[in-house]
Length: 588
Ligand code: M6R
Picture 1 (cartoon, rainbow, N blue to C red):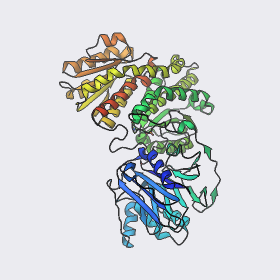
Picture 2 (cartoon, rainbow, N blue to C red; picture 1 turned 30 degrees about the horizontal axis):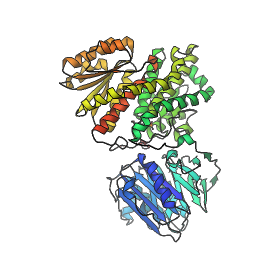
Picture 3 (cartoon, helix red, strand yellow; picture 1 turned 45 degrees about the horizontal axis):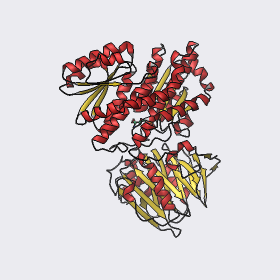
Picture 4 (cartoon, helix red, strand yellow; picture 1 turned 90 degrees about the vertical axis):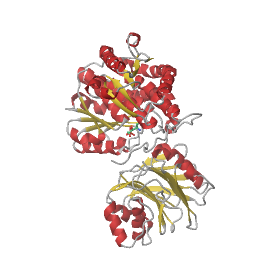
């Protein structure tokens, strides 16, 4: 989704804003823009279609500024639709969606306003300009009161150099201070390395930078006391020496897993004990990759006879989570609108909400009863990699607690969690074989990923990765479903990645390999079992490292993540910035 940033700094304000924007770019790269306000009340604006580099240039003058990276929703990516939007004495950046756009636009048009862009965001700056009677804050508050939908806005007013007024409802906003500057921003990682102290805003709150200070207040101006916390060093993105962010993030998986395990062991989940032991229903939600992690949780619990209902968060209404239920909400960012909506609805109906997230100060963490914070470190590439492995580790850790509470003893594999970081490291040994596979499949137009049991979730995740960054039509399926329709697409050379990591299901997986091979399809088999690989008809055999079967999805996905990345690079694409996507999806 879009990223917004605001900065007050008597020195190098432009440089600080620009640098924050580069760290925010993963939220959208359709266009970028920046507006600086000088002490004399003059705006300098630069905005353009394209990524943040498109607005690089001479520093703009001013001590106060706002910036934006856009993921287009209303109106095509273009210079005209780029933020900041200006009207009269105001400049505004916005992340979110104005749902009553049509009614507000009709009203403003009838009042004689002329729009310069196709965006819903421009409505807001026009509402502010019309509401202005000399009180900057009151104008912003009154415009926000008219909005339906979600927003985080940062606004400048030419009459008040040195001030920024921001508001949040439904879209993330965090305040920060450090290095002689004050900041507001869409998320914590973008402030890392710049702000030393941060404090997230809650829905309905305003953040105001004024007189060299930053504070929170309500719509009526009443101040809200807040405590700023120090930014954890691990929240800072590491520099990438060479290659893509995605490659660097895959390389970080072993470290991310050991940090996550150490932090989970230190965490206190005692408040979850009643829910773990006696929740009427166990439910889990997430989106995209996070949903696949939830599917793995289901598989590992079902293996022990404990049933978990699992849905993509956007379809969670059907779960009807309520009093007596435990809802586990999984989200790397903790800001995904669908996941937040599902968690909020469950909590309102009386369910116990347990969040699993990579951002301890996220909206999801603040609405959950309890949070398992992973320590994957900032994940910047749009395609989730290391966060998925850490989600799986966290969910397995929680599954071990749930099973111990329900069965009286922890599952046999609980002691093997500590082996995951080393197994992940050994999975890198598959990469040369995966390189050859990617080279062989570079011209493919579609492919299947198949598996059985917990491997189905891994197959889905593998397919999502290649769709997302290599733009290959891919489907992840239960291997047994192949013969019920999908086999029709298999012809000479059609590629199929087959996961066979559950020994008891390996024979049935081989049946799928035979069905594909008989139609001329090319099977790439992934298994940790030498005899399964040796007896297969697969054209490519990739030996995975051994680890407890129940935990295998956290390891077997690594060659698939790497495969997608290699395929993408071989196709001349940028793995970090896939078209049409953004890292954090903060609209439903
Ligand atoms: O931040 P979240 O984990 O809530 O994000 C959910 C999905 O948008 C995300 O996992 C998406 O599917 C990834 N880009 C896939 O690589």
